[in-house]
Image 1 (tube, rainbow, N blue to C red):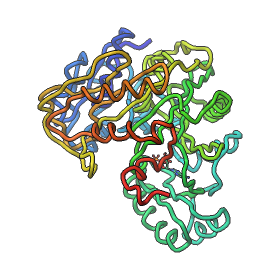
Image 2 (cartoon, rainbow, N blue to C red):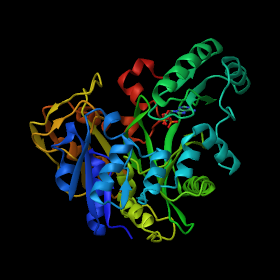
Image 3 (tube, rainbow, N blue to C red):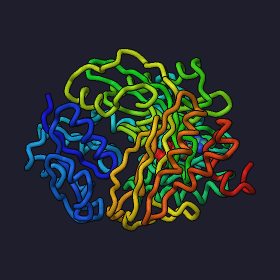
Length: 448
Ligand code: ADP
């Protein structure tokens, strides 16, 4: 059994994990950088430890500091949240070697899915459809061009160690691919320390649809249905919803079965997500995120399952609290409220001078904001997640609009005005989505 959980994260997800620990009767330890002394997670946890200077490299990504904090406070488990060290298999191993429980999947599963080129092979070997592309990391520009000519342009180059859209390049022809190969390779090397690239067919109007899974230590893996995350900017999600307007029960069963098969292939436990692209009636494995995701609340809203609490149960050796795939009830939408200029998208740091949260039926807000909070420039720009639930998509959209109208954030620019625009777009309302939705909305002339 667990008794004290160290949360190796900050922001809204640290608060979310504290909430789950409270319900489970577990004590909590917060870690924070020097820039985050005044953060809510520091105040709300039972104990807190400063782990270093503001840059994440020196604090939240500093394995030695995080482990020392756990040892000093006598924590017996570590929850990594998302981002930072969440998908670092080495960190997971160190946690375990120090005699603590890792609240996440086995390090080996993180490693096998973390290499995206290897993950593609694993998926294919388990009858999960993948896009045509390279079976192994590419060894040269010439090999990339030859393969692209074989499968047909356009293609997309990706970093095997990739994440956050880094090291990704689309190429429409051999000449662009030649050039893109070098830049993607350099970008991947700089961002991940490994320059390995692979390539796959580029789809021109795909939807991003992913399946949430939970696995316990007794071999049970359950899929919790899908989320659609097609509203993206620069390959980063902005709005997520469940169920997907494009998925009927027959497709849901096929996607969930594929997600469970891919998870089972790596002996997966804890919460994870299999990401697919979907176009013209076909879905294709893209990657697995071996952690809890930002958008997990929409699944919680339509299934009633507390995903973070399940992670704690699983880590403690308890069986999953559900035996089979739950039915999705109603419709949930998450809007990411970022500190950024809604027109230029430049990050906006500053002090929160005014704050008012929406109230009323079907509204959940996950946030670490308070009035007077200084948004530091060092970390990601997520300020809050507004999650709305309705009996159907129309009701969820109406509630989202109403909630945005009464969501007050003063002192920094936010993505709230952009969300209001999206919620008026005829294509959004009709559920006609693709990963290019936002580009087309912002620059209609560039649309296809
Ligand atoms: P990362 O791990 O860096 O976020 P992903 O592989 O998850 O990268 O891809 C992120 C996004 O890039 C997808 O949601 C989609 O919008 C786009 N994308 C990735 N692969 C393809 C592809 N083969 N065709 C079209 N778009 C793609």
